Image (cartoon, rainbow, N blue to C red; front, side):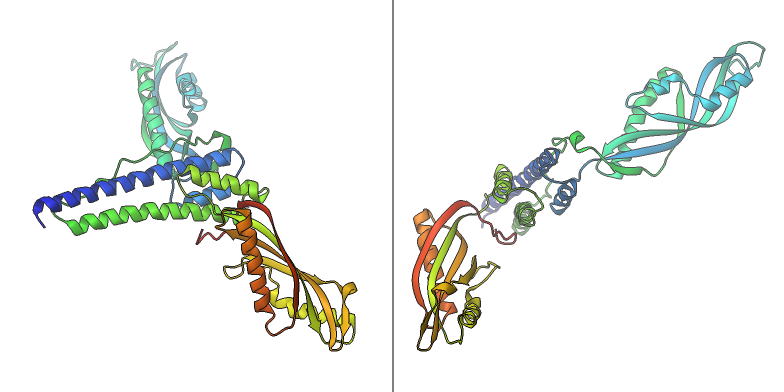
Length: 395
C-alpha cells in the first residue's frame, strides 16, 4: 500500500468517525428534547423521564439549587452618630443589594467595624465606613451541583461590578454546600436548553490505519448503542404500561417518538381471531366426566403466554348440550379460539390464511393420536396495528 492510498483511507475513516460522533450528538439532543416535551405535555411521568435520560446517558433534568456563601460587606453611609451606624448595620444592608437581578437574599450576621470616613468621630451626621459579616443566598437552575455553584459564582461576579460602582465591596467569599436540589416545575423546564458539543478532537492518526479504524468503529458503535438504548427503553415503557392509555393510542405515540428521532417504527401486526370447532372422542361414564376429560386433553393447545413458537393466546370450552354417545363413550363438541398477532403479511387475506394454517398445525401437534374431528376453522382480521407483543431486546 502506498503512502498516498494509506493517507486517503485514514482520511475516509476520520470523516466517518466525525460523522458518527455528530449523528450521536444530534440524536442525544433530539431525544432529550422530545422526552422533556412529553413530560411537559403530561404524556410521561417525571421518574420515567429521569430514568430514561439516565439509561441513555443523557443530561439529566435541570433542578433548582439554593447556593449560600459567607462574605464581608464594606460600604460608606451617612449616619447621625456611631451608635446609629452600628445599629443599622446589624439589621440592614444598602438597598442596592435588594434590587439586584437575579435576586440575592442578604442576611447580616454581625458588625465587624464602624469607622468615621474622615477619621474623626465628631458629633453630628457624617459618613461612616461600615464592614459587616453577612450570608448571601441565591437560587439557580442546573443539572448538577458543580454547575449550580458555577452559575451562582457567575451571578455574583456580575453583581460585584454593579456594587463597586455604588461604592459597595464584597470580599472574603466562602461558598457553602448547596441545598437541594428541588424539582423544577415541569412547565418551567426548557426542552431546548441542551447543546451539542463540538465534534471530538481526534488524535493525530497519520499513518496509523489500525488506530483510525478503531476510532471509527468505536464512534459507530456508540451511535448504534444509543439508538438501541432509546428504542429498548421506549418499548419497555410501552409494554410495562408505564405510559397510560389505550394500548394502540399509546403505541402510536411511542412509534411517532421513534420515527421523529430517525429510528425505525414499531413492528406492526394483523390481529387475527381464529375459531376452530371440533369434536373429541372421550371414554367416560357421564357427560360431565367426558367434558372434564376433554378439557384435560385440550390443555396442550391452551396458552395465555405468547412466545416465538406460539405467538397467540388460545383457549376453549365444551358444548355439552351437543355431546353424543357412541359405543366407546362420548364425542364432545369443543370450540377453540386463537387470538394471534401476525407480522409480515401484506394483506388481510394473507394474514387470515397464515392464521388458519397455524391453528390447524397447532391442533395437530396438540392432539397426536387422538381421533378428533375438525369441523370448521374460520379466521378473521380484527384490526391492523402495532404488535401487542413487543420485546425490547429484539424489536
